[in-house]
Amino acid sequence: MKTPIELKILDSRIGSEFPLPAYATPGSAGMDLRAMTETTLTIVPGETVLIPTGISIYVADPSLAAVILPRSGLGHKHGIVLGNLVGLIDSDYQGPLMVSCWNRSSEPFTIEVGDRLAQLVFVPVVQAEFRLVDEFANTDRGEGGFGHSGTK
Ligand SMILES: O=c1ccn([C@H]2C[C@H](O)[C@@H](COP(=O)(O)OP(=O)(O)OP(=O)(O)O)O2)c(=O)[nH]1
Ligand SMILES: [Mg+2]
Image (cartoon, rainbow, N blue to C red; front, side, top):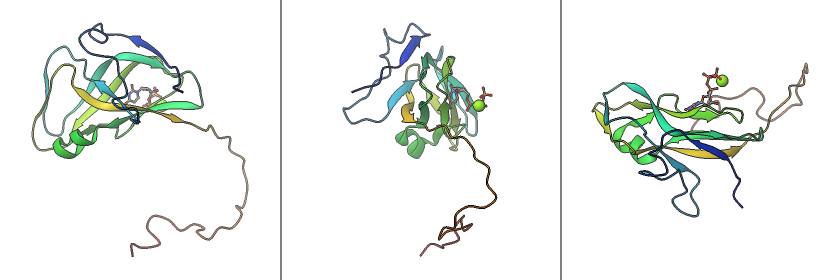
């Protein structure tokens, strides 16, 4: 059963020239987001560009969020990742869905209009309420962290 999510088309090329984001296979976790720029764009090494996707979504349910993740091929082969590393889409956000695209490679990278740049994944969210305490119940780990157990 898929969860219905409201979506607005902000760029009429989506739904005509380019399809709406969709799962590529029945088991896909992410839907690819396309670069809805006016023209072809070259991102020089080290540069970060905010790229519109041509859509907005309204997740609405506070127990859900969406995350924008890099595509592994672009990230690994071309160093095209996200300027914010991961994009988090709040359930009450209704603005344009944007992808912060960072060229962390040493080569310029050219994005054509409609290229699939990043992917959108819906995730469950638990909202916490802090309960102030003076002491935690003991655990084996305690305060150990940040590699305190070594690598072997
Ligand atoms: O890659 C992203 C990340 C965020 N957003 C939108 C949706 C998100 O709900 C909103 C705010 O994101 P976030 O809370 O991460 O950014 P902020 O810098 O804390 O902005 P704000 O003060 O608006 O919360 O921006 C995107 O479109 N793309
Ligand atoms: Mg915020």
